[in-house]
Length: 340
Image (cartoon, helix red, strand yellow):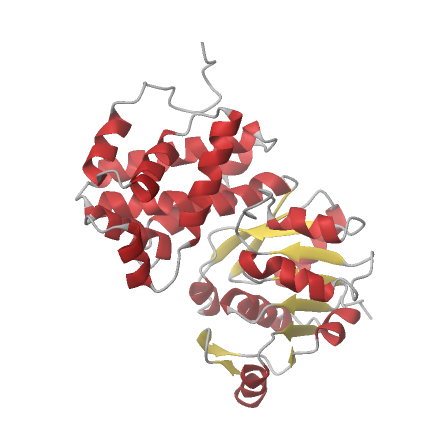
């Protein structure tokens, strides 16, 4: 009889629920933890997560739990699928239940404000002896729930972790590709939110397909420029976690970051844009962090500079767009031409 590793998924939002359901359908023991007991009981009774993925029927073998210790204790792999702003709080609760043999994987896309740490690095702060990995890519949860063909990346320098995550998640509609560049994979997932603001802005200004194409490729150049300066592999940005995630985020009008950019392009201020959205888009906070880091490291990021002037300094959108076109000419493909 083949050994089947047990899996714990921490976080009952849309992506966590979808991943846990895939694991269950693949025949692995899996528990899904969420903090809301009322929602958990409803999910047990109806086999539906009505709050986050109402169209997905949950597998009968997916165990829904609110006891974090019981959820984690017997797991071989623990997937943390909680928002970056809640990440440390959850780790504080979990730190007494993790053992050094467990594989720890994060799906959260964000940068911690005070430290500029990515979520896998925060995992290492709490659990320095555990193998750590990152899942990232163009993964809209509703499309995965609908079994639309999707690719993702599991990045880790631990081969056993990469193989195990591929085993528990890969199926006919969800393809899991491996990488050993954890930092680049995760940084791509955080940075792309900034450029979705630029995509919404360009749409509101009536810019055409040529502009959108240029914007996407120059965004990719900026992302990889900063990431490589911080130790990532530039080739990572040619894959799903780089250009793949960038495309899906910048081309979806439903993206919160896109909608903020669109509102700014219509002449609305940041406060009004956020009020209409109902919450702050991740890219708004990430923009300020990346602007500070790029200035500190003296990395040339003209799109970040322009968006920062628009979002935080009240610069006119058309003025920012013109200023971006007037910037010094640069090489086309990053890292091909040497800088003089």
